[in-house]
Length: 410
Image (cartoon, rainbow, N blue to C red):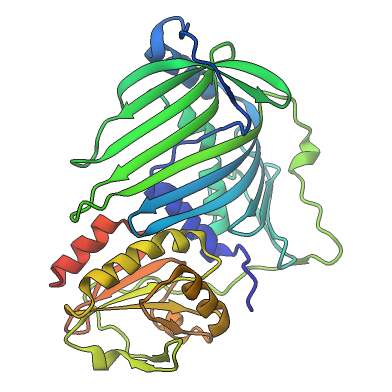
């Protein structure tokens, strides 16, 4: 069984997950005690949000430690992925980023001159000379480091795009053994699509103008009235703003068994062009049935490249299953493509009762043929065998339905 490590493929996917759900940095405390007394925030919720924005705009250094939990819910099921992030930064160019959890392990360091990326399960690291970690290299780990550094910048924009803000109550949170009386502010953001619902709830310490807890909720409408709900929360363990941080914290000191490498994986070529001929392949599904692409000509084919260890893939699977059930026998052929061993795949799909077939690509022949740079990747092939859509990262149900409709699946 292959190890669920966090390689650049998974990192790039997680970045796209964050972007696709419109993440706002969220800090939460796991042990709140609720009080329903009147709110006493001077100046009202909008002014409080403005003060919070100013606080984060003026940060020179910070240490944040939090667990990010993303949940996606629909009528077909509920999936979640949890990742722990320990982030220390001295602006503009010193960084320590430690990632662990459902997506694996990764460490990023930069002292302003040299940057290191270390993958503990591989015992491998890269070293690059960099004037600033804000200028990411081409690998997914550097892109994720850049996204993680956006955490305080998101709070610096907390007052932007607000449609309605209201103070709900005060609530006491205990952080690191110290209680803080917070004002709970609910924010409705301006809608981007008809029927979309975007709500943010913040627990704000008005004495320090810091967000100590937040919940982000998004509801995306669906053509069949089965809405897709996304909820993001973060359990905050530590928040320390403008602390004095020793330079030694940003130096990576490899263990004796760690090996320096140039890249963790061989780079894959760019994505396939829309309208290009879909490469023919032949793979077996979990039942040993041979599937050859060219024999499916006349059908629309949806290929979902995924893995059991990929958090965003898990979140996307219920939507794929839903489309498979709805359009099965109506001109759509849905296939998962997975490069893990058959037993690992079978255990996962059986546990979650997925009925669309998954093709076993252990030697990554099809992944190479289709230039898969990260997962999940969605490929739609039209009835003439041409690439109709090619998407790296988490795909929304509304987008998938649009692509299938354009390919003739109604």
